[in-house]
Image 1: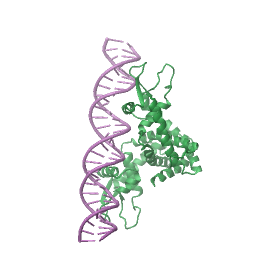
Image 2 (image 1 turned 135 degrees about the horizontal axis):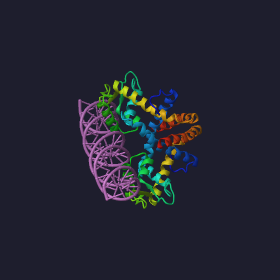
Image 3 (image 1 turned 30 degrees about the horizontal axis):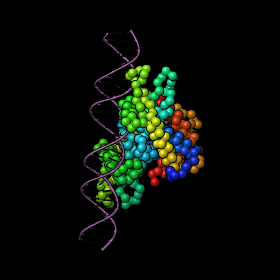
Image 4 (image 1 turned 180 degrees about the vertical axis):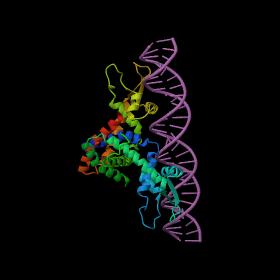
Length: 161
Length: 161
DNA sequence: GCCTAACTGTTAGGCTACCTAACTATGAAC
DNA sequence: GTTCATAGTTAGGTAGCCTAACAGTTAGGC
């Protein structure tokens, strides 16, 4: 984390390779997201609502839905950016915005039926495209990829904090 | 590649997990690219010039530098987008645009000294940040990651074609 | 009680990077 | 030497992000 250390050369090489892999992957991601029905940002937001949907984090005391600030933090964007996306989704009938009964400053965002269906459809479509790409790999390659995904998840989780 | 096939459930699960990992990784990438000196798009372009720099692809007959169309294809963007970035880099003194001696329609883009230095500096900085992140992992995790990178590279190479 | 401070979200304005469509200029084919 | 294809640029538009400024709500200190 500290730039003042010289850093292990092997670690730097891995860092470089990983960066390179991610850099090239944006092309893949762009292709996946070019299916037109839902933008990457919007799908991420809807998915988040779905995951955290039914019961917020929470207790019976907490109302259903996710707060705007929480959404922003989860997506790694600032609050105004989240608001913008939420408004678009609301206009599209995929999400709903309701005042929080416990805190009138806050807004609770929930998925509509249509939103749930849209997430499912978009995910299915993108997954099948991705599966098509992965089907060209060898079994060993797929195993190596599968083994690394939790690691990448761990890396991303670290940053969230 | 074909949506009409039902597709192996295991493959679909892997596809979903991989998509998820990439989706979360954009946060990491954003952090890495937020160092201000060079945008992600510009660094990618400069890096490409550096990699393909000295001798295009080519023979002695081909002039030095990379053509705009080739740059666009390599970055996975359309030609006007490439032109836009190239012009910015040119204005910043990091790249040079010269007419192709063999084909007056074409333009050859090359790195300047300053451009080379900028790539090196930006890369170093980003690598050390990334290394910092990776240093929090266990040895096993790093090994798993290292094993998967060539696979991801293979996936990306497939798409390029 | 009330005034200030902290917090939640929206609005306004601006930036970057991408896109498509239309154009210019050169090269190649016949 | 037209005609067609190719290489890049220009013009205009969109999505998604940002910061700064704002409005409303809650919580604390006195």
